[in-house]
Length: 415
Image (cartoon, rainbow, N blue to C red; front, side):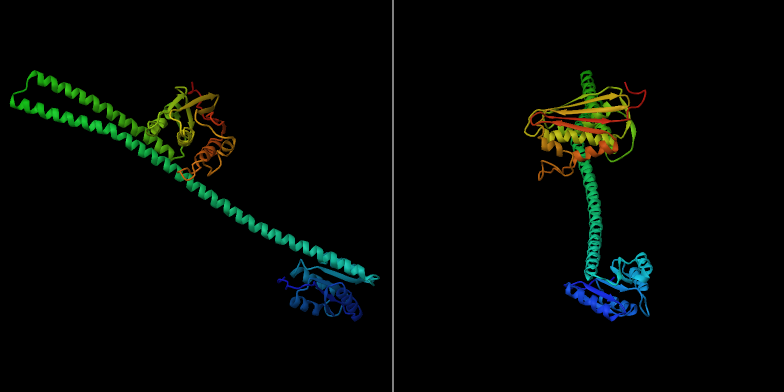
């Protein structure tokens, strides 16, 4: 049905081939505050419906040209929410019942001994139509709002994924910068050692070629060679260790692959990659983990979790604290792994503790904090590892985070 024009009074179409009935119903409706419209048969009624869009129809059953039952069928097919009340003589009550089956809302039996019955039936039908219209509008708005909320959720998830990826890349960038800075020292010493060895070789070669070389010169040259080689080899080995550790951590952090790895060795590699950040402070990290504990899991996610926990302690937990301690203890039970992470930093209030896993929650807003670190940790533990994470903390009492990861310990390879 087309949109109903704005009007102050409901428009009621009275359809009846008897002029007396039409006039009587029309006058009664007008006295009751309605705007009546009349039609003498079904054909005219259908034309008026298309033109005026009434709010309700009172329709006789027995009429020339087009009868009431056809009017009911046509209106119900085109405008199922338009109220129709059929008015039937006592002798054609079966037709009235059939009309209700075809879509009429109610029926009245002529003669009406009280026109109050007519008004009550009209009021009841209009109230029902109003409720149906309100419900449809509500459903329409609800569907629209549901789609809007769904889009908002999708947009938020996309934004979170981008920010989480940015967070991972930023952490990887810090790792690269730290390792690049660290590797400069052993490489520089190595270059210095080789340069010194080259100078010593050139000096001895000149003495040898001129025949001026003495036993003491050879002894000094050999001593210089040994010292230069020791210093160079030591520092190049350290550089190689840095590169190896960095390479594995970097690959794991940018990959979701599952593999087996020794937990203690891997944690040591993670801490080694974080050494450039830790060495700038007086904070220490203690690790307690079984030597031969091997697990089949996701090292990249494991690295991200531990890196975020350590950085959280360095940035938040040890703020204004000169010397703090981080303790990492790994325990195994059957095929499950439990990680106890503690720091003796400033701790958190109850409000901070309850919001710690919320996305974008940070106490460092405006100072580089994104509020995604612990949200990333929570998602990795609960979704990637299908594990559980608990946080205990009080102001001044540090933090204790317990992470339980099921079904990761390799059978027969754990001590």
